[in-house]
Length: 240
Image (cartoon, rainbow, N blue to C red; front, side, top):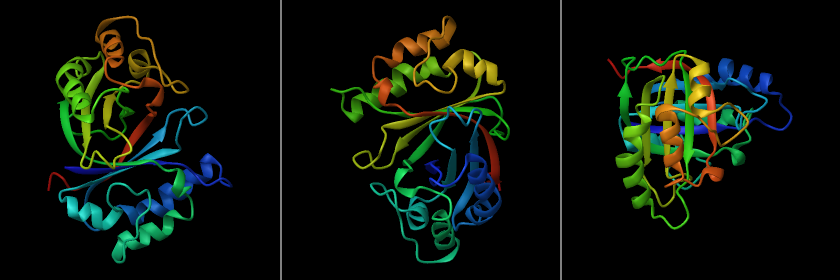
């Protein structure tokens, strides 16, 4: 499936609470009806004061052209749909988002591990927005990530679902990929991947330690935004 991930930043004159209220109660009812959306989920930070963003919005499409029609193509943070709910949603984002400060990512998702049968509502999620090390090509990065790192990461203690997302247009993408690890328990997530407020972490045992040691082989760790939150599935027609 093709996926649009938006890392949301609130407008300067809004509190986080005001942002969440508007996003969840005013914008989400519009966004879930955007033409072509097969699944829509929102992620709220577990620790808003230390989170890098105010939230994450993730919209899935079966067809890449439908995604581009609704949300724009790679290489632009802004977009201009001219019809339907996509147009209404675009007009509404100006009411609560700092649109120019909102990184986004369009990619194709691969589920690497799933012990919850896709039922992620209420799970805790670590999203890492990956930037490759200087001196690596995107292709070299993908090769190491998918073939060397992923077999380690899927075995991190406590991980119940793990997905990787590769950009559909690497040359124009803001990141080289997105890694998404789900946990049922927030303490397990913190033990494995650290808490909010730091892009780095230092697990001392098991596969989490092995994975942390390996990231230095292919990631520019200080340039890698990340987000810890709790997911709410707002719409899911993927099983229909």
